[in-house]
Image 1 (spheres, rainbow, N blue to C red):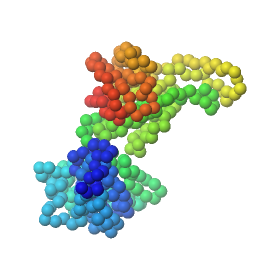
Image 2: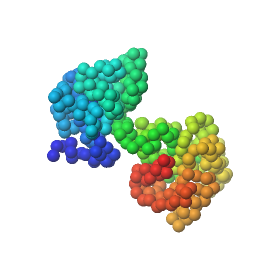
Image 3: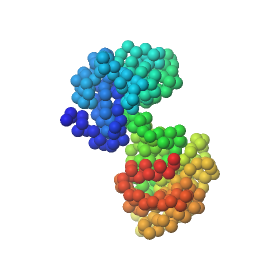
Image 4: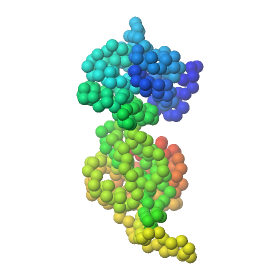
Length: 397
């Protein structure tokens, strides 16, 4: 068994049975190709490497063969690799991924020039409809060149997809490998949420008690992040509004931070995006403390804090997004109360669905939830939050 096979599916099976041609061109970022190939394999993919002559001067073909388990194509042969992989054949590959992709290669693809194995494969893929994903990497002055930008637009008009580079200093660098891999998962996936604009509101609110302290809760934000990742992978245009939580947000997810209930209401009032669906899994304060100026002094035997009822965010959501499908969460301490309370939430706010869960889900990687829909279907599901995110998003289709 080749060492690459030992990695297959070690992380997920999201790319299992997916066949990907990895085109490597002559950017210094080619040194990252081993890591990229291995990460694709860890998600289940089969990777067929193809290199330009310039790429072989930066990273040795043997390293790429070791990474993928397949000898890289550095010169087209009588096997007509470009046709058997990307042509009008019975079983073409699922994706042509060119990473890194130089300005030279982008421009050749745009103009139909195929003088390397990689550009010939791209020409064939455009003609046959095999998806192409380019990951540009070059000096910023090259990326900002008007003709290069025009060629990027030409490629896009022909259906070629891009992962935008990371602009840092005077460089247009390849983004993090996780972003490339997630975009591959998105591109080769079922795309059942494609063109859907989904807003996910997650994390905790944090209401100020004084100029230092806040009143918050133990929401980890894990469910919101899991929902965002899953929605992205299924083709949705995802926006995350993220509260007072510490779970890391992936670099490919667009997000806005908020702290208080009022912050959240202001986002709803000012945001013009016509979302198709909204999932409110945030732990939003029911009561807001009356803030005291400065710092509450220490040394007191007792301390009383006056609170008033917080505005209901769901009411504002309904006014601002009357046509959106809305799913909201309801947390109860005792499992026997969840169905009744979740049904009340569903009915009162005319939701697409309501999700009930207990306190045991807070902070952990797993949860047990009750799904109630407006069609009166109910289901209990238990598992990791990543798995439950997929079940919840199924309600948006």
